[in-house]
Figure 1 (tube, helix red, strand yellow):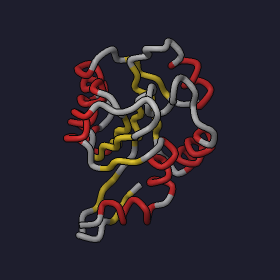
Figure 2 (cartoon, one colour):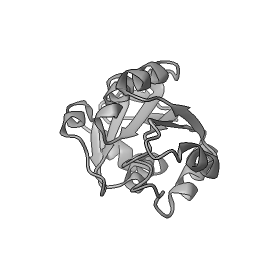
Figure 3 (tube, one colour):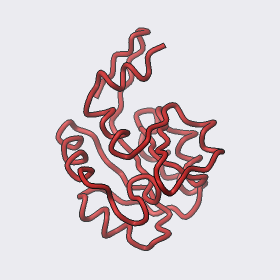
Length: 153
């Protein structure tokens, strides 16, 4: 999807890479409504990739339930390597933890979710956008004007 920003910059975003614990899920559970948002994003043409360290051991079950791709990466360096294979210049990265710094460094847009599991302060220096929930993060791409307004200079 192409986002025409008010400063004349055009962003082409194709892939949403999302962390699991504290980002896509809160204490191991995916919030209500997220499955529907992901399905709508897929209809719009977005590729959705769950890139997780899989601390709770439930990443495959969640990815299968949401009908999204899964890549397991055990640390920030592995996550950074994984996103390099996904055209990072067209990727959005959504996360909350130190392990996400690798994807945040490479993605075109990085979004921090501030949910009940908390965030690691170090990720904030790599964030473009901070939102209160995974639902709010995904809504930025379902409501183009919201994303454009947030990115406005």
